[in-house]
Image (cartoon, one colour):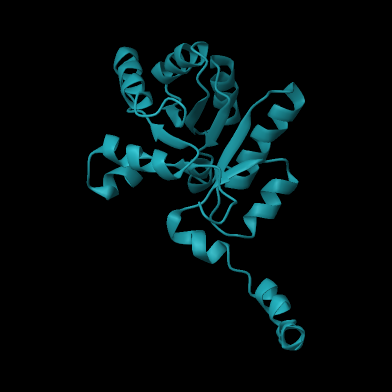
Length: 199
């Protein structure tokens, strides 16, 4: 968070499981260091998902954010939580059609899973994300896509297409925020700074 380019911490069940400790304790810690922390609900029955959302939101109502898997029950949960005024992210959204349904249910952010389509040789991940953004733009939806970035060069490509949010894995933070050309350009002035500091 100290680099100033991140707006929060986003997780999924795999990431939380890797921590090997109580999920509520994890998110209490995240809320201490991040402006926002996203927690993904279990995909289950509507009442169970709503109860889980209430339990996790109670950790820090100002900073906790809820991700809801866009299953059929998930859409109902998105509707109920959004009607309470909570900013809900729909996750596990594989197609543009499913994105439209998630937005209709009240989601204000969408995590595309178009990588699933790429792995099945249907369309590329980027094509899937761009198709969703085209619909958002055409319909004037007040919705943000939050897509995964798997190489630093993708940041500019997605930004040029109007994608305003993305996430990167913790293991990639240092690599993505290191640019040898920027370091080289700054280092070119080291001699000048040495001369200035001599006065």
